[in-house]
Every structure is written in structure tokens, then in C-alpha cells.
Length: 297
Image 1: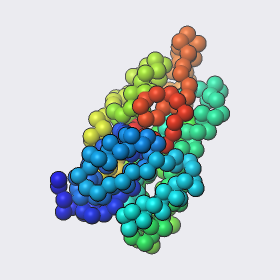
Image 2: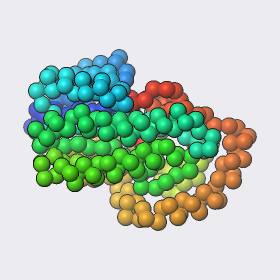
Image 3: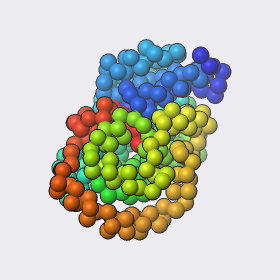
Image 4: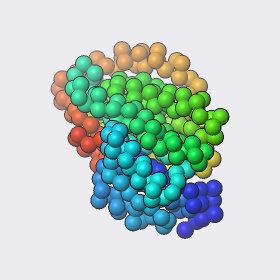
């Protein structure tokens, strides 16, 4: 076990911690000596992750869209560990498809989990972060920088959490609380693998220009995120070229509109021929009604 780093003995809360980025990040931070509070929807998986960590840890089953339940869990986390030094708002879900065909319940649920769930997380844990002069890291996405057809709910929610985090940084910086945003491209997690199971989404993604079409190893993203937590970074980019995408983001709506005019007629024909799965994609990569359990762009 590697200890003695900046996080040695610090308490880090991770939402969406049962699988993927959340679970791997817990292991990485614990290896640096951090004590870990795991939050998610799958108690068996949370227990498995907790038991694998080399430092003190505990886990709680909670849906981040349930404000009262999350507030109760936050109080239990503080009672158990005595403090909270950092929070990684990682929980999220995705859904693909044309907005005109989407079920309102599915579209709304993506926004509820990704945006409102992040706000609930911040509201529950900010009193402790103010006391410890701690750090909040919001996991966002390339989707916050570039709009994409068939991903309106996900892009809207990730744009929202990015702006929300920037607002918090401006409000809380003078009180010693750091706030950061992590931008991830396609990362090899259950969520991305689940999206690739849909023929139309897989085909559309394959036609993106390199390197936007590439899927990156989860370990690389986790290493970058962990370093961001240690350094209290305002921005974390994985991969490196997302820095350039952020600079060029003003042009992306125009570019994507042109891409849509070219690609969407073909997508419409493919949808008419094979259809498209609807529903949420979360932990396990399945389209279902679970939410708040995992994130991996």
C-alpha cells in the first residue's frame, strides 16, 4: 500500500462507486492512503469494492436523486469518519436516440441523475467541505463541450453540471473550498460498452473523426482523476486533446450542425431499418431503470 501522499488519512466520498470509474478510483485513492466512502445503488458490488480497499472504507446504498436519503447518508458518513475532505460526483446514466422519439421519463431521468443528482450531492456534503476547506470534483464529459445528435439528454445534463461546478467555484473559492471539473472522452466502462451494443450508436460513433472515435482505457482516466483530486485541480482532461476541444468549443455547435445535416439522413434510414434501443444505460451496460450507480464517458 502506497501511503504518505497528499491524501493520506483524508476522507474521500465517491458516488457511483459500485463499478467502472468510481470503483477503480476508490482503489487508486485508497492506495494513496485515502479513506473512502462509497455511494451507489448496488450493495453487493459496493461491499465487494469496499472489502478490496487497503484503507478504511464504508459503503452506503443511495440514489443521488433522493435528496432526503442522500442528506441522511451524508450525516452517517460524517458520523462514521468524523470529516469529509473531498467528494467526487461521479454517478450518472445515459440514454441515446432522437429526441422526437424519446420517452419523457427516460430523457428526464438522465437530467435528474446527472444534473440534479450532482446538485443533491453538493448540497449534502458542502457543509463538511466548508469545515475541512475541502474539494469537490464533478465528473463531466466531452459531451459538455460538444453537442452530439442522439445524445441530447446526456449533453444537456453534462453541460449543466459543468456550469454548476464553475458557479460553485466562484461562490466558494474565498471560503477555501476547491471545485473542479473532469472532462472525459469515451472511456472503456460498462456505460460505453452498453452504448456500443446498439448498432446505430456504434456505427455513428465509428464515423467520428479520430481521436474522438477512440475508446480510452479506464485506468488512464482514473489516474488523471486521482491526480486532479490530489492537486485540487480546477480542470482535469482525459485525454489531453480535450484541452483543445475546450478552446474550440465555440465552433462546435456549427460544426455539429453541419455533421448532422450530412449524417442524420443516413441515421434516420438505419433507425427505420433496425430500430434503436431506448432506456437508460448505467452500471452493467444494460438499458434499464437504474440510475446513479455508475459513470464512464
